[in-house]
Amino acid sequence: MSTRRRVLWLAKGLGRGGAEQLLLNCARHADSARYEIEVAYVLPYKDALVPALEAAGIRVHLLGGPPGALWPLRLRRLIAERRYDLVHSHMPIPAVAARLVAFGRHAPRLVHTEHNVWERYRTPTRWANALTYRRNDAVVAVSHAVAATIGRRRPGDDWVTVVHHGPDLGGAPGGPAARAAAREALGLPQDALVVGTVGNLTPKKDQAGLLDAFARLRLDHPSAALVLIGAGPLEAELRAAAGEGVVFAGSRADVPALLPAFDVFTLSSRQEGLPVALMEAMTSGLPSVVTRVGGMPEVLADDEHGLLVPPGDPAALAAALGRLAADPGLRERLGTAARERSRGFDVAGAQRTIEQVYARVLTR
Image 1: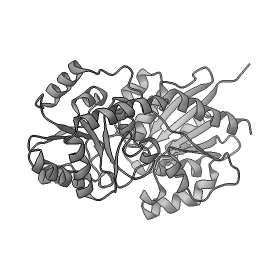
Image 2: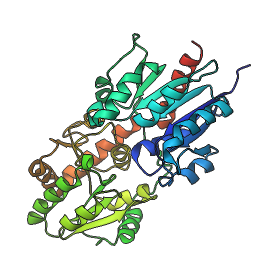
Image 3: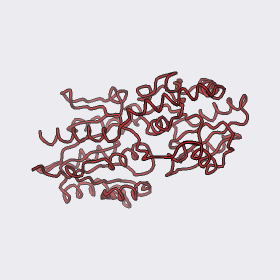
């Protein structure tokens, strides 16, 4: 008879970012007969996904709160009290803490998911990550591009496993009625050309470059609209720079229901691992214009499922958006191919692969 193993998923926050959404998606497909999954997070103000995780039957622990510097000690206490067999960390700072405090006779196995290329991390974070990295019993990378940047590897071909996750749209609406409802919810004209993006408003997403590109697009398509779904530290700055036709929709829990409002999806990111937002857009049948960074070229072939442009090049982004804006037939072709390509996105299969990693390290 198999023994049910207790696993802790460890995250910095549980807001509506892509990495956090992956946790929720995977939680819904975890093998509860083999693994008892719990989640711990550090930042108390990033808790948007806590109710959904709890609704999925996941016990959630908050490590943060004042005095915040003590959260690694709380993590050690939690590990000792709950006697986890395995701690699966997401994001480097919590991962470093887990590697430092999970020691002793009953220390859990350590698995880490790498969501970003290492170049993205600040120098202190990168060094702390690198110096403790070999304590991982296994590493999961969200794309081959991310895996290629991992330093301080341990010997063994199976130490790093690349897992392309997928969205969990759960029968999200589609068709003309869904399009009309989504546009009404966003306050958009029913006949406008709408470009949309989803992501936190941060420098790495480069929404400033997207606003530049959209202003160029409006010269030829003056009735076009741009929707930015997300929130973040650059919101005030971006609002000040935005021209006509730009809608800031804020952080939303109903993104799948809003995607039908878009004619074109776009990401202007300077860095990515493999964004959930792109996979959701492709699953929704949207043609996309995204930058050639991270794992995006691994799932979207240029001129087949969408268009790829260089990062940090608003002129190229505007040209690609203009090409789709002027050609409904091209939008239809790319959107149909994107939906077909998305059939290969399998969050349940991704979770099964991760659980195979668990089984491998737990039996060593």
